[in-house]
Amino acid sequence: MTDPRERGDDEAREGPRQRFVLDDRGFDEVPPKYRRFYRRWQGAEDSLAPNEVICPVCKVVIRSTRELRPGDRVYCMPCMSRLVVVRADDGRLEARVAY
Amino acid sequence: MNDPGADIHALEHHEFLERVHSFEFWFQAVEGYLAGTTYGHRPETAESPMSEAERDRLVGVLCTYCVGETAALEGASGLIPIAPDRLAKIFLATQVADEGRHLEVLQHRMRRLGVTDVDGEVTRRASRSLVAFRVRLQGLVEARDWEAALLAQNVILESLEFAVFHHHAQRADAVTAEILGGIIKDERRHMGFGENVLGRRLVDAPHTRRRLQPIKRELDHLMLDTIEHTAGAIGVPLADRARLGRAYLESAARLGFLG
Image 1 (cartoon, rainbow over the protein chains, first blue to last red):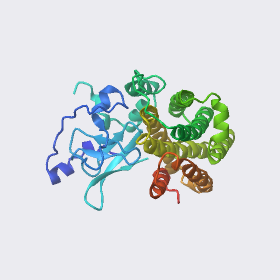
Image 2 (tube, rainbow over the protein chains, first blue to last red):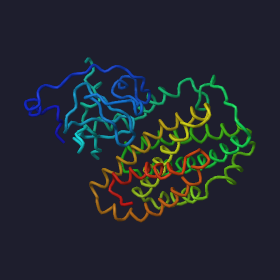
Image 3 (cartoon, helix red, strand yellow):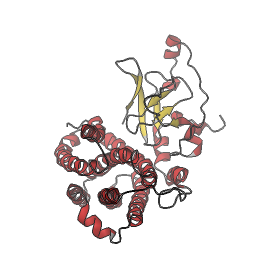
Image 4 (cartoon, rainbow over the protein chains, first blue to last red):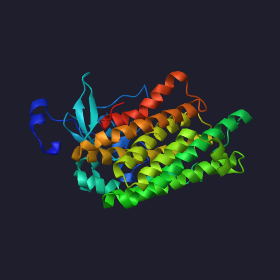
């Protein structure tokens, strides 16, 4: 799988990506240096930022330092899944497991 | 960023797998949520008032949980010799430690609830379907059927436990909720390992799915019976029981198994 980070086509088409500084949200299931990449879903009142998707396997929120776009690869460290970001029928971004 | 390896999403897949299947990862992960706990909960957490009927109901549920954890402990240790590679063997070794801990904290909880003969209580009260599942899983391990045993244990059993424990923890007394909360965090790794390792295997050998389908159906019945046995005792409304069952079937569906 080609790392989408190496591609420039989406940047040209959709403009530069937003960057995000990740803060530690207290997710304690991974080693400290990786904690900022994950947070717990807070329920019905919660919403996803442009740099976040939910892991379909374990329901943790995965966070990136950049705005996510279809084709991006992210990892869910708590459940050890490799995921690819896709655009769902309703227009939202979601993650699919890439075995 | 000083450490280029610190952006987890930038890792190559093989580097990611090396990290998450290591004892080093496991140590740092469990330290995050188990440090300072005693038998799975903070020592200062106070017992909630509980009627005799509530206590007895909880003990009955814990009996079934103990069978599930014993099945997983025996299964994970039995899978190590037949695991196909080093990373899987090392991960399973960490899972054995987790499952042993789960069994210990659940039995300790039962003793704290006044049970004197824990093993006898488990034998008398645990779900018969889960006992049958344990026997079936052990048979798959003894037959050295890696794919079927992985499906049974790390996909079906772990996903069921994840869903049921999550539901129970939201309604349980404070001590039990903390114990279950810690177990759920371990289960995330176990079920993720099962789905992803089996998923990669099915990509390489898609015909395996057809062989596993009847085994999955057989085990589904035992799991759904176990949910029925447990759901009432942990306060799952009738309307939500199907949702609980679906939660564990989602993993199987992603792997391409039919209902």
